[in-house]
Amino acid sequence: MKKFLFIFTFNLSLFLILFLGIQNSKTKKKVNLIIGETVYLPISFIVGGSFISGSITGGLLNINMKGKKE
Image 1 (cartoon, rainbow, N blue to C red):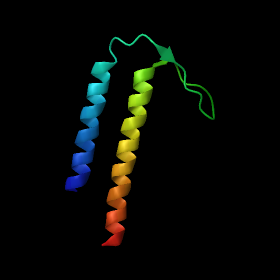
Image 2 (image 1 turned 60 degrees about the vertical axis):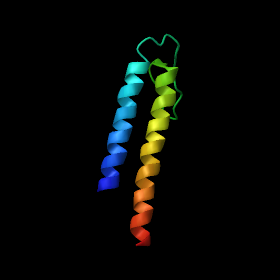
Image 3 (image 1 turned 60 degrees about the horizontal axis):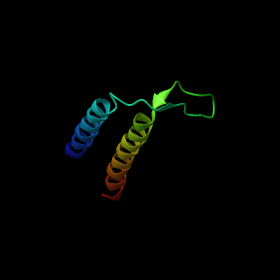
Image 4 (image 1 turned 135 degrees about the horizontal axis):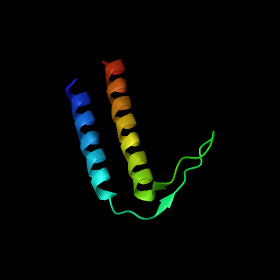
């Protein structure tokens, strides 16, 4: 539970810093998904969102793997 809380607060703080950092971003692109396209988003938000989602996934998988070993 302690590690889950750490992962959540760490990634939430990264997400808030990401929003502060993209305030003046002018370069925007669309992301092509399998189903369709997204709206125009700043490139820094796309990269930062991918990093944060990978960090959350990796942290939760790490917790899940440790739980199965013990």
